[in-house]
Length: 134
Image (cartoon, rainbow, N blue to C red; front, side, top):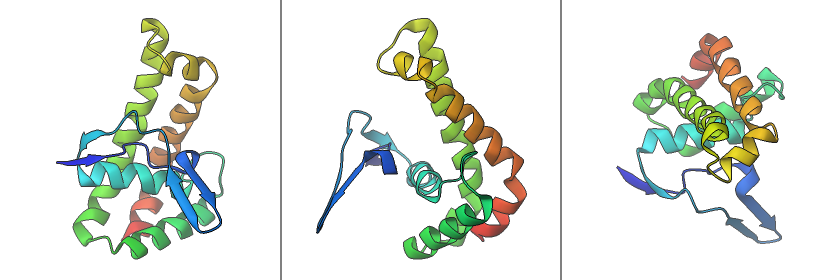
């Protein structure tokens, strides 16, 4: 177990000349290395329904190589990406009924649809993503 940001993604990264900073630390807490890595890699590789698969796979390989991901990490990556993506979908869509904020508002604004599409994208391209991650 590690303590992690739990939402490392381009939408939480602010860059300026010579400085990078992550924001939105409200979800920080315990997780596993592979869960954190899977979430960040999926986001930064842009493995979703709005980006070209070939470009996303190229970014996936670059991030994995730069991270020097182990063979075990590479093997566990896709199932962990699917699990984290579906967990975000479930959190957002489940929050509509409970009213839990900010997730309920985000779901109504379309974020739940994004995560639903991203999960379907990962499942639909599972073989090629797994191959690219090797």
